[in-house]
Amino acid sequence: MRPVRQAALVHVGVVLIVFPLLFATHTRWIFTHFSGDAYLEDSGWLAYLFGSADPLLHNPLAENNLSFYAHHVSPHIFLFGAPLATLFRLTGIQIFAYHQGLFFGLFFVAVYLIAARPGLRRRDWIVAVVSALLLGALSNALWQAAAYPHDEIAMIALVALAIACWLGQHRALFAICLLWLPLVREDGGFYAAVVCLSCLFVERDPSQPWNRSARLLLVLALAGLLASACSFLIKAWFFPGFDAFAKNFAGGKSFSPAPWSHLTMAFALERVGSMLQNLNIVPVLVGSAVLAMFDWRYLTGVVLLSPIYLIHLVARRPEHGHFTLYFALPWLLPCAIWLAVFARRSSLSRARFTEAIVILGVALALCAPIQAVAGMPAEFWFVAQEAVRRPVVDIRRMQDFVLLARKGFAATDVERSNLKQCVSQAIAALVPNEVRPDEVLTPDSDLRTCQMITLMRGEVFYGELATRSEAAGFRRMSSKENAEVWVATAAGPR
Image 1 (tube, rainbow, N blue to C red):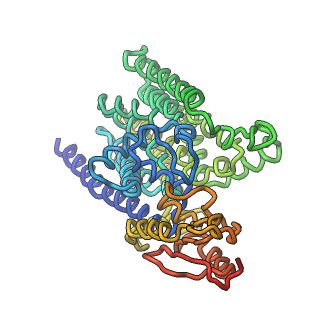
Image 2 (cartoon, rainbow, N blue to C red):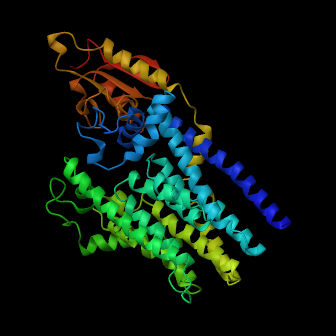
């Protein structure tokens, strides 16, 4: 009993150290993001929705007059944000920051719980715990997703947590995770099915008949697929106006000449070539193939998630097809399932040393700090570093300053009534419900249509927009924190 108690204390200690560090780092990253380089799509948009406490999630004025459900069926945003907004008066940016910190931290906890199973041999226990730490906290795909703040981290965190809860016999929490997944996005039911089938295969003993738990998991998997089908129907019937599938994947309508017209041999070769150079993906594919020689269950994650990988691979948008931004997150789930299979085999004294080396090797290959040290071009460890180094300004003060400036410079005379109060992407992210879409500047916008321009120092196109504003006859009149108001001079070329 003493070694078991010591192991339990080690696990508790690791979680109590790592989870707060991840929560603080990812939370602070969001605050630094909105302090200097935010953007309307999608971080400003999502922050507004988290703070709106609106069950129908009406989009901000800067986007469109639709519900967010026309884009994605995501009650999760309302259910997470509304209590914090109404009971604790948190802003949307604060809620979004805490959301990211919580779910990045929960993903680590879930992966760690999957690996830290009782009954493992000491060698296997060390490998499993170290691999879980690397995969759950330091994977490059995690920091790549953090760089472009989005709520999809909740999906993979809940998937991993559901698997950990089932394997740990925590059925009530497993049920909560399973019920919550379809609320994150319309494909959440599919991920719920992946959870159930993964647990089924991890625990499956071919020499034993199908038991009650196995039959229950099959039923729940079917229910998950049905839930996803219903979500897509609800989106189509009750929230029309935007076809996300056509825009992101199939094309057609106003996005391309015809659905799937982008699929050519050259396109396929380019996408496959890109995937085979992606260090968030190649180690997972190689690891799955090698580990499958020891136990076919190591293929579970890649096989079950192959529809997700395939639909992204053939998507018309390069962000999806190249698995950039947060689209690489699903590639971490096979690794979490590896740890479940490895722990199961080790508890039965079947795991081999070679398996342990492969799992640890893949975890190291996926690790962002190691990729950074190796000089890999697509490493995102800088996000963790910048989350600590970059300053956080008084964001609410900036918001108040922008709103006051817009009110003070509202057009009152006929001559200027057709001019706009233009804002950059970062400023629009701070006050998305106060600006119109035509007031949000792009790098090549015509500045002659602007009465006033508000920029944020530090954003991507600040240098370009500031230079063009000065050339167009604007001068910097006032600023608060990183927000700047530029107004047209009388001598400027109007």
